[in-house]
Each structure stands twice: as C-alpha cells, then as structure tokens.
Image (tube, rainbow, N blue to C red):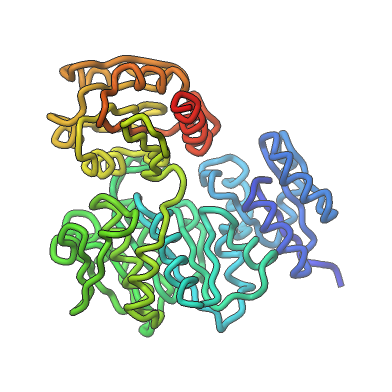
Length: 440
C-alpha cells in the first residue's frame, strides 16, 4: 500500500521538523520552499533522505498532498496556499501536525499574546523544572513542537509559546492550560489591519478546550473581553487583573503572596508575566515554596530586558525583542533614571503617541537605528537630542558619547529588525558585542 503524501511549505526550523516527524509517522514527504531555504535545515533533510526543492514551488507535485503543513511565515494569501486550498487539500500549522502525535497523557500549556510570551514560557518551564517536573519548552521559541517530539524523550508537560500565525493553522490542537497574556496591535498587516481579527486569531487557542481545561486571560475590557465573547470556550476561564494582583514587587495569587524583590524580573511587564507563570505552576500542583525559590533564581532570556554587565557606571539593557510599541512602553516604564533610548527599524504602522508619558522627563537622547527614521524623529522631535545611525556599532558609540554616569542605555526598538539585521536576535547580539567591546 502506498504511503500518504505530506507536503511541507518552508524549509526552516518548523518545516524541517514537521517533515522529519511526518517521515517518522509513515508519510511520503516532500518539502517546498519558495526561497533559498536554510543551509542547516536543508542538511537535516538531506541526512533524513527527504526530498525537497528551493527557489519556487512545483505546483503539480505540491497538489499531490493529502495534507500540507505550512510554515507560520507564509500568509494564506500566497498563491501556492490559495491553489492548495482551492484544490480542497487541508493546510495546517506545524503545531497542529505535531499535536496529532503527542502521547495522550501529556499536559500541554499554550501561551500566546502580543508581548511577554517568551519570558512567560521560559519562566513557567523554569518553575516546573525546578520543582522536579518532566517538562520542556518550545514552539515559537527554541525547538518547534515537532522537534520536541522527535529529539527529546516523551515529556509529562510541554510548555509552548504560540504565535497568532501558528494558531491560525490549528484544527484539533488543544492545550490543557491556555494563556492569553494581552492583545495589542502587532502583525496587523496579516489581518487586514483589523485588531479584532488579530484578537480572534489569538483566542483560537481556547476553541477546542474542554470543561476540565483552563484558560487564563488578562483583564482587558477594551479588546480581550469582546474577543472572548466572540470566541466562546468550554474551558474554565480565569481573568487576571494586574491592578489588583501586583503591588510593586509583590504578587498576589488568591490568598497567597510571592515576591520578585530578590530576583532579576524587573518592571511591571515582567511582574505580569510572572503572575501568569505562577498561576500555571499552581494549577500543575507546584508548591508555593518551590515557586518562590524558582522566582528568586530565574534569569530572563537574552534580548528581553537583558542587562549587559559592565563596570562603566551605566546600565546597558538589550531589549531587542521589543518589536512593537506596547512592548517598548513597558521597557521604558521600567527605567528608573535618565535614559538614552535606541529605537527604530522596520515600522509596522506604529503609533508612537502612547510612549509620550513614559518618555517625557526620562529620555534625554533618542538614537534612531534604522534605514528610514523620519516617523520616529518626527514623533520625538522635542527631546533634548535625536540622532540617527545605521548600525549597532554606531548606535553604541553614540550612546557611549551621550550617556552620563548613572544613565540607562536602553535598546528597545518598537520596530522589526529586517531593514538592517537578520532578525531581532542578530540585532541584540550585535548590540551586546559592541557594548562589551566599549566596556572593555
């Protein structure tokens, strides 16, 4: 009997992992990438003996599929996707495909939102791991869900960061615990510049949940509450209100309190992330003592409010992952002294007005790092100093010139990175390396 045909669109991390998982599950797999593909992941396909093409799609071969796994970066408006859907072939995300092969006893925690996904995912995993739980983290960060199933022994708990693009392609995917941290404008170009459509995409995380499952959502009457009404779930919904449950560095969860005072999670945004992570850990029966000990020992991920150690009397902070206005708002809010702010990149239709209240009286110098800085320059033209640059090194040299002893130098771009860098990681890595060179 012939094998069923699986076609994977995109030869990146999630695509190569889905292809290998499909091969393991008995599919005849073909990978098709419109671009050049990644050398690392093409080598994985070669090693596995999986057929692939780059530089375009051979439509006749693609349309032989019984199912297509689409990488999250490919929009539904792409001609090849339209052709597949027009032929009646189901198109799913790698998250959906991997879910079909996870062992049924495993617990899945799915975390989505516009900001804070990575920190909340990593912190949740850390809380579980420190308590001795057999858990791994991945999804939209690190290893894809498919790779977690392929390259790790079976786990009791999978903690998955999930983007709206991944959730757009689910059919049966169901987390036992789902989290929606927040909804703010981001990636609206994929959703017709309609915030409601973007919010509905995030709320798909709860569409298949059962009455025994949990959905944790931020208290947000303006955007999240209407989205929840439009996307009903059978799960037990818990609304988390940071105004009620965060007092400085103290978190209140039901009748218990937890402290962030001795750890490295700074700023209100990280307190919100921790509030969700603590809730998740308690649902998974981690003790309060274990949670507090883990909070004390947790170290934030690179590129997210990452303090770069120096001895020059100034605080250099790498927040390269802040690719939208809301994320940068929280970063600026956390600055507790005079600040040099480095921002800019590929603008995604940003409205910078909400940043005024956390910029005024705090930021004395704005360094615009991007190919086209006109919108950013105009928005903050009244600051003491606004300068432009085209590289991480130049940005750091300018910051070194204008930052005084005791100042904070914050890279928090509020924009995507693709005008000057490969991605936000490349941007943050270059920034850190330049800071370390100057500090040395």
